[in-house]
Length: 208
Ligand SMILES: Nc1ncnc2c1ncn2[C@@H]1O[C@H](COP(=O)(O)OP(=O)(O)OP(=O)(O)O)[C@@H](O)[C@H]1O
Ligand SMILES: O=P(O)(O)OC[C@H]1O[C@H](OP(=O)(O)O)[C@H](O)[C@@H]1O
Image (cartoon, rainbow, N blue to C red):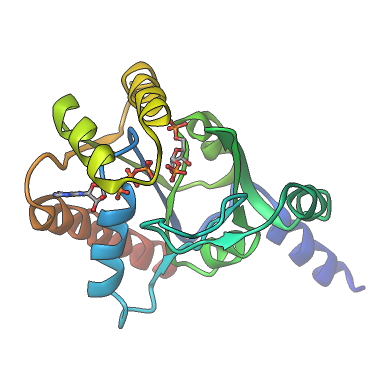
């Protein structure tokens, strides 16, 4: 490898990764993360500058509001060991990950949007130079009603999700708070406006 090639390789591996923006969507169970992501994805599907991440979860997709890839525990471990993930976490007795391709999308200047756990937020800045945190929420009685209506979990699991949601509110400087207690169009259109601003920022980064 030439010296220039070697420097290029080192530069491309230097973290935090630049050019694009990583948008982390967080919030308590039932706040509507998957719903708002679908709303925005449908409306932005002709816009190549936005990349909506398909997660990997150790849960089958049956009855889920989210489309994701499923791996069993053993396959998840193997993928983790082989470096196939950009980010991973545990919650609700399940394991979650984002594919390594997320990093390439960010380096290529995209706005990359993912539903992640609040537990990942502290580490994001070391991976991605430009991070936006969108903290979705809804009134407690709304969360309880939605989880009951969704019917994906039994009553005990819903109780546990409500407890976890109430406990782990992310008090982070710079998080954009977005209320989704009302109709999905209200929070959905606000979310799209946030993504448009991130895309404008990424476009400026590309010029400098
Ligand atoms: N604005 C809204 N108005 C009415 N129903 C909504 C709204 N937003 C979401 N819902 C409904 O609430 C339920 C929970 O939404 P969703 O699954 O998107 O939440 P989530 O934050 O992704 O939850 P989890 O973290 O448990 O996956 C779903 O049944 C969804 O259809
Ligand atoms: O409470 P915290 O750690 O923020 O979030 C934990 C996890 O809970 C939800 O999972 P699911 O989509 O309901 O399976 C979120 O998407 C996240 O991955």
